[in-house]
Amino acid sequence: MIPTLIEFGPLPVRSFGLMVALALFAGAVRLAISFKRYGLDARLAERYVTAAGVSGLIGARLWYIGENWSEVRHDLLGAIFSSAGFTFYGGFIIGSLVVLYMARRDSTDIGKFCDSLGPCLALGYAIGRLGCQLSGDGDYGIATSGFWGMSYATGIVPTPPGVMVYPTPLFESAISLVVLWILSKVEVSPSVLTGRFQRFGLYLVLISLERVCVEGFRVNPVVAWGLSEAQIIAIALITLGGALILKGGGHKPVAG
Image 1: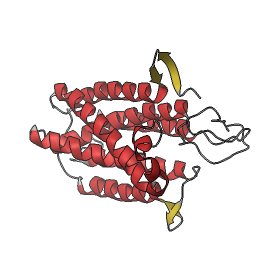
Image 2 (image 1 turned 180 degrees about the vertical axis):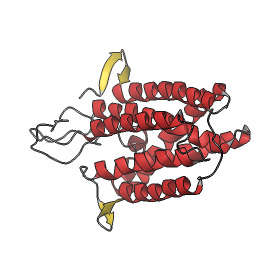
Image 3 (image 1 turned 120 degrees about the horizontal axis):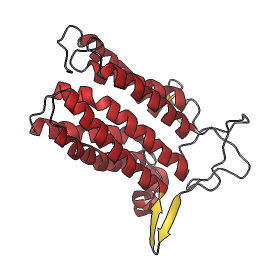
Image 4 (image 1 turned 90 degrees about the horizontal axis):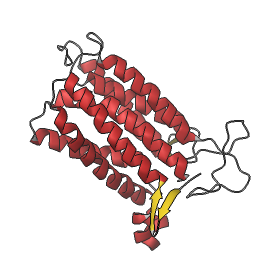
């Protein structure tokens, strides 16, 4: 693992921070493409992605602190400014609320806006998880003796010496790229899921199914019904996504 790529005097370049920056840049470019296809102002894409990125990181950190309060409350400043410790759904929820507010303020069509988000979010997530992989921030999986096992002994949250674990960040990056490919194909289709919010619903279903599956390889506490918190939230989002797909049927196409 390479938590720090290079140091310029007292200023380190962290691999996680670099990948987040790349994810925001790539996400802005991809969102602009979707905005054009849906007849939205592509110039707004960079603003929305930047706002979502900043607020999402804050939300992900605050959610992580809330989840692990008993462990971090004695060193709250250290937990706030650490380069490890983010919860995806906290960032997703806070970031979504911020950009939805911005879209309403700008009088952007909310249906087209949401339907354009899927490819951008999938691409950004794929790149961001590579940052987790490079930094070894604790998002890896349970121990394994399989050939796919990896050691994170030099990561921010190191594995014990000699212990090999599932490289779940790589699993998520790979699956997110498949989700991106599916959503990109649907986006240019004149006949597949053309109702308002249907394509956003498809994104929610696909990315949440990915999380439910990958969580099975992670060391996360069971909250209820044999499921982790992330799995429970993912199942709720699958339900929401499915409802959006079913409810959106019969509308006119939203993409040109």
